[in-house]
View 1 (spheres, one colour):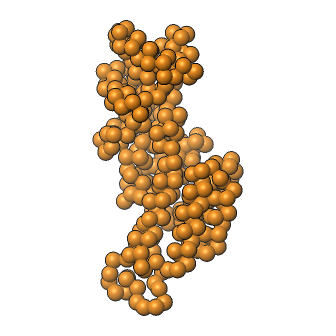
View 2 (cartoon, rainbow, N blue to C red; view 1 turned 30 degrees about the horizontal axis):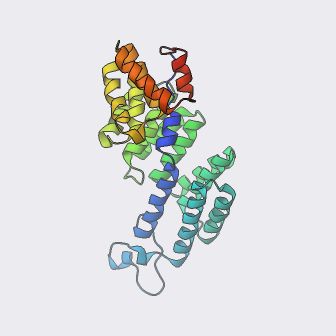
Length: 283
């Protein structure tokens, strides 16, 4: 049986996940999620017994955070060299900011400089071992390098922490990584937990359907893939092809042919349409 592609769907539906993660972390820096240096003009919120707020953020941390927000924006636009320069400036202002090392790691990973990427994640964790964003993104990076055991351990740590990243997204990434590692039983459990926390995420529903299809649990697979294809904006060539293959194996030629017609019409040049025309339903 041909492996059902999962990484492409995750890339499309979770595009910019690392950027979202980092922006959430940067927001935490301004609202007390990271230690704030007291302002010299008066006692800090901590010494007064107050809750830390944006006014407690030091001037250097604020300037570094702004640089890092710029780096994150450039990273999202694919301007990696410019993003890296902004990160360097952020670190020169405040070398204690874990998100800056994390951003640098993500940039180096995107540029294909894997040793520096790995070093950046390690530096971020050396500053804050309980940083959910760093653990999540380092886990995904290691999964892409096929270091599945190490990745799974980081995802587990991230999922058990108060979240900068939503637990459902960490579980989704962990489940996809478990699929890549061939651990389908574990992936089903992980993705089911992710779906319970966020049933609206199409990437979770698709990947769960793909795992169930591989295991021959076709009615359950049909349930999840129908949730994806019920919303036009979520439909992809992969989701239609998976649904068609499920209907084919269920012995429902009418449903299969309807999905095949949609696939041909909407994605005529896709590899899924090519597989359809070759009749490769059971590959």
